[in-house]
Length: 121
Image (tube, rainbow, N blue to C red; front, top):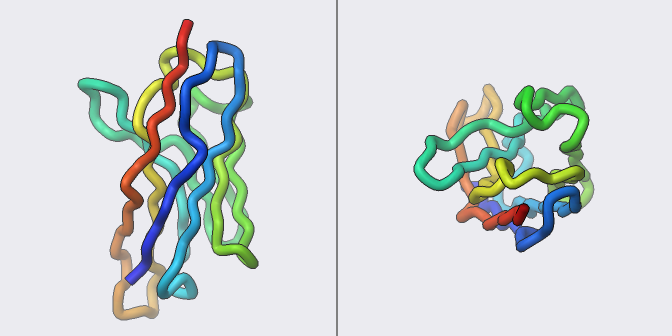
């Protein structure tokens, strides 16, 4: 099992910045991909950014150039630096980890409880 705990959400004005953190514990050696999803009020959860064990990343088009995902393997933590925030970025941000192949948990998704980000106009 893998446990994920997010932190860093809050209220910020448009144009401001926040940094989210997600600390992983448990069987962290089995994690291949980590990422951030968000769910805006009344909308489906969507992928914001992912980072793979090799360091490659992908971003939702809407956040490219504003958000940066990074990973500190020594601390088992993934970060999401969010700059130039917009009201449309408001939502609950969830940390996600995917178990890699070759493990009994192959492909299993783990989720944190989420952290709320509110961007005021």
